[in-house]
Length: 83
Image (tube, rainbow, N blue to C red; front, side, top):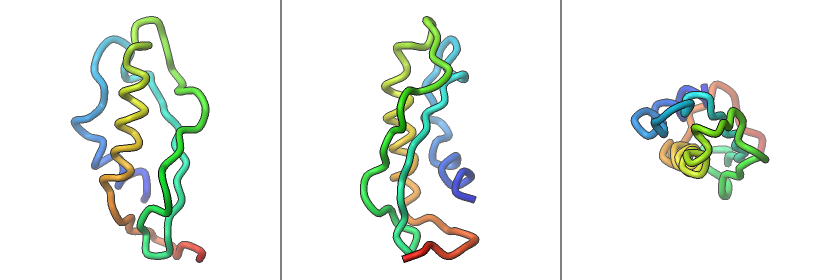
């Protein structure tokens, strides 16, 4: 459910270029009980899938991943968020 909501905000913002589709950025974020963000999303370690061809897209990929999470605003979850 969370992934679908982020993906909807990610569309059209994905970095383009050779091997860009191989990039995977892991982001950790916490939610308030109402589904809003509780603080800033945090990039977890290295972005996976880096190659010589897409290395210059890594920073943008990370920025857009965090931006997509923030654009959701309030997540609709199929389960309650613990307080």
